Length: 305
Image 1 (cartoon, rainbow, N blue to C red):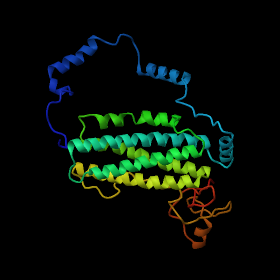
Image 2 (image 1 turned 90 degrees about the vertical axis):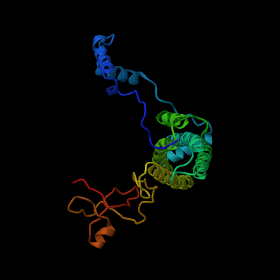
Image 3 (image 1 turned 60 degrees about the vertical axis):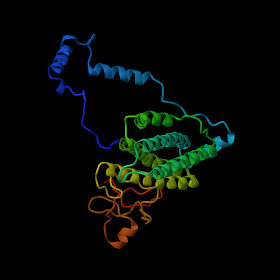
Image 4 (image 1 turned 120 degrees about the vertical axis):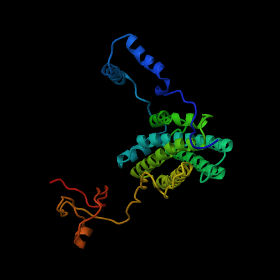
C-alpha cells in the first residue's frame, strides 16, 4: 500500500452533491429540533453534572504500617507520596498501552512493508523491548513503595481515556504504516512529558534510585521521539533535521551544572532581576533568568519591587 493519500471516491463533502446538498440544508429549517434549547443551556447541564458527580477515581489506601510510616516521612520532608504513587500508576498503564501500540505497529510493518527512510522491523522491536523494560521498572517501584501495581489510579484512568483513540488507529485495517506512526508520535510526546514530571516528583520525595531510573527512561523516550519524527518526515518526503520539532524537556537537575547563590540582600539589575553572588563578582548581568530552586541556587530571578 502506498504511504501517501490517493485521489478517488469520497462522498463526505457537500459540494460534490450539488442540488441534493442544498436540499439537505433546507431540510434543517423545515424540521427543527424537537425542543428549544441553546448551547448555553447544554453547558449549564454539564456544569450541574460536574458539580454533583464523583471524582475520576481514588487512590487505594496503604495497608501496611511500615508503608504508612514511609509515606508520612516522605510528606514531612516535602514530598507528595500519594501523587507520586498516582503518577507511577499512570506511567505503568501508559507503558503497557505503549507496548501494545508497538505490537500493532509491527503488524502494520508486516502487512504493508517499509518505505524509504522508514523504520525496519528491528527498529520497532527495539523500542517495543524498551517499553516492556519501562513497565517492569515501574511495577518494581510501585511495589517498593508499598503500592499495588494492579490498581488503576485516578491518573491512570485519565490517561486511558485521553489515549483511547490511539489503539483504534493502530488496529484499523485501513491505516497504513505512515498513518500509524502519526498516531504513535502522540504517545511518544506524552511519554516524554510525563516521564519528566515523574522524575521531578521522585526527586521531591527523595527517592534517588527511582530518579536515576526515570532519567534513563527519559533518554530512551527522547530517542523514540527523535526516530519517529524522522520516519514520519521521510514518509512525507520531507527532510527533517535531527531533533527537529518541539523542544525536549530537560531531566531534573540536568539543565545547568553551575551553582548560583542568592541571598535576601542580593543586588538587582536594571530590570529588577536579582543577581547571584557569582554574577555580581563577575560584574555582569545574567543572560538566563529563571527562578532558583529550593536550595537557593539557580539563575538570576525577578525580585518584586
